[in-house]
Length: 463
Image (cartoon, rainbow, N blue to C red):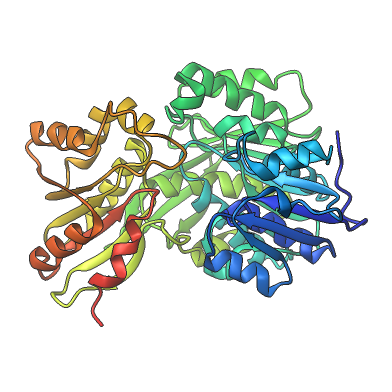
């Protein structure tokens, strides 16, 4: 297999360079002295930023973008074999790497590489790790699936042995990684268009655990059904295994979790049954208290002291689109935006929102992909039902094609059965107008979903 050597710069071409992860990898190569070009279907702030760094950007994906001076090609999982650039690269017999393969190879250049996996919570927990590493002045390289203010974007290129990244399970892409510290936050039903069932998902996470390097650490949620299956997968390997969670049997445990008026948790940290410290977070929700245990365990194992860990966790605010406060409307309503797009994530966000809302709770929800909406239709309804009012946009297709088997109207009908006020409006303009006419003082609105529902926020804010 083709191996990228960071000490020997070449010309890399990225098909789909505008993606949050692809752009980050492109930046790492630019910093290492590589010539980088790439294509995307439309211009964006990300492609414009890359151009400012000297990256050659092509809008539109055509065969002529594959030029004679390209040494290897990187492509995203969304690129299919009928893509013109992909076909031209194959025709020229150029080395081709998936995004995950390149990220895995780059990870090999760092002694203390940390990969954060899990169906939910990857971006926020990676943000925690990044803040801890920065507070400890380790000069880390960070690759994250969201915009983090502390690094002014989604990528930070450091010059040390410390590296932290998200590890996405979709299409088993994280099986390309060989981290020193592997984190598994949770295992839940998602991406069923690929995995088909929860058993396949659990088996995938178990395989990911085995990729941890010799002498490394596996940090796994001890409160879930699949913990033993994952631990068994590495029992014959030289890998330290630690568990975290609320249960007293875990190696790292959070006791007496409380939330302040902003929904931010404080808890007592116990390690191996012994009290170690009081931990206070600036992110919201009890679920993030549990996730922070994983960050603490991994950080201690890679040599960061507790003082810097506690300070880094306190400094960590959510990445962009993770229960992000956007501002206030003229009517005095508070607006938040949240990336939650799975029933479990929605339920966690709703629990936080209900604990801090001062008046009525509004959710403007955009379902993400037809397959996910269809597979979890009743669970979506249950997760959204604690709201006072739910407004529904059309389903965001992402990589899928509408086969007519499910729509947001179906979700509206399920929510109505539970007695929650729900209105299907479809387009964003209708949602914005409805909210402008109905939001009141001290209401809370959360725009929710992994699509582009966040685009309605600015027009609602007080000028």
